Length: 90
Image (tube, rainbow, N blue to C red; front, top):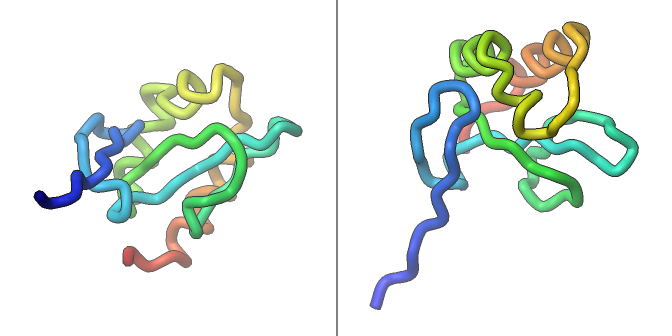
């Protein structure tokens, strides 16, 4: 029997896709929001496609704010978009 592939929902577009094909964003205990390229860091996670368009949709729909149950400053979104450009999909 084949193993199940874990699926996660993109907070930008809402599409369900394999966890390994997505970028994980975490909120730490200190309410610090950052990218988790390993996918294994401690903290509340939200998933996003490797696409700047999905990040824009997440900003407009407040998808990350809903996932983390907190307001997120524009500078954090800017930092995430800069880091997103530097990471290549696996």
